[in-house]
Image (tube, rainbow over all chains, first blue to last red; front, side, top):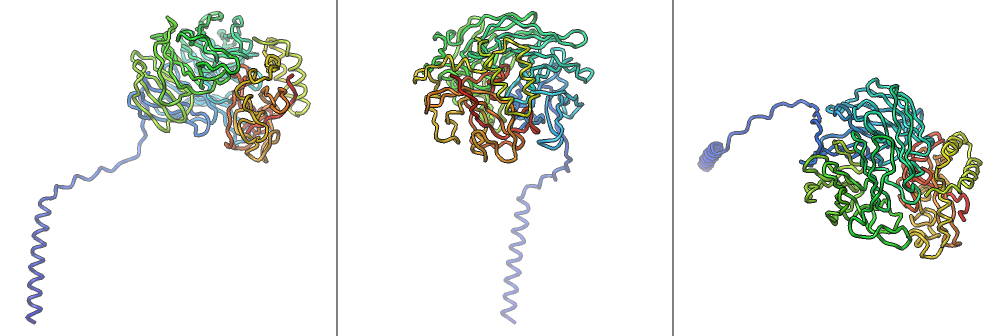
Length: 393
Length: 180
């Protein structure tokens, strides 16, 4: 009994000590924070898109047009699209227009081409406008144009005859189709016209009459679509009808498409750098423009940003290893910057302190367009044409 | 600059293509487009004419290094202007579509030099359509490839016209004649 009594005494002493220690520990523990409030699922809305937002349109593979805030580098949202779609913003910022094609049974069945109208804040479908067709092609910006006043959409079709489908966006219906034989693309010009390039080396402007019917006028031939083509992804200011175009050899064509199309006078980006014009002869290695969207135009300053690589001719899809900054007024290269990473797409914001955007292999780089200092490297951003929400597309 | 002298040769080629196809409607439309636009610069026959110099100095970078042994590689001689998955890696062949797909009767065209005989050949790049993208042996060669407003030599367009499905699977490279 005595042994058991002593053991009980020890246990009670230990218990008391432990209890006292617990009280002391409790006294030292900070108070627990209040419980987290119960949450409910909700949905974000896009902000009003400023000029420093960029859209990366991935229209092949993992599709979607991703929007990034160039200042923060944060993704703002994704506009849904089918494979090989085009996406454009209403100039007033109310809607996104997605020209897309689907089939009733996935890859077969009845083909349905449509212009899907999405609210620019919620991205919800506002309406769908059935289209009589459209061309399926990757990485092109000017297969879908929206007029400067937001009234008309121009959808380029090739089936395989070339035409421009005109859509009245106010009445949500197709007005008709204008054949543009031997030409392609449908970049919007002003309130009622669209701009195409032609295989005979001319410009074609399709102008709508009061009833929305198009008539085509063409410039003289001024370039060789066969031997020195102009890249499809040129830069155009819809409101003024001014455009900057670039050819495979590095000729810049300043285009005025505001009236009757006229043949522009070209100048050479290589000569702007104090080099000879590029040679197209085999074995001749030159600095050449290349990529999928090889030139951006900051219209307020007149600066061009061109992706350049060293290579033989017919290397027009090679991504740029250098970025050339060119003053289009003086036709002088201001800066040649060796890029840390190759790039196939370049775009610039149209504000006073612009941002430059470069894209390659699903990575988006954001640079200060004046200093060319990198501000963001954004992985998994998608790969495809770049669009900023200023006047120049 | 555009070469109008090749119109007749192109017409003959179109007729030959149509002869192998039951989709004459599509080709007729393409033909109608060309008839309606006599200034339409046509197939790259003129390139072959201008590029008759088959010496090393006369060849493009692709042609100088092209090989004739392995048609599953991007540098196989016929692939000088191909863009897409090689059907030879997808269960098909250079002129054979893989099972479950259908060859498009339309195509873009390249002019490629066969290093074994030194001849330039017209190659029709016909897409095989109707199944999801094979996504193997992806190549993008650009000899004399142009933009979409000159479609006959553009390799970005989905050329699955005139078939039951426009879903792109892979691309073949079919010899359709010499370009001498």
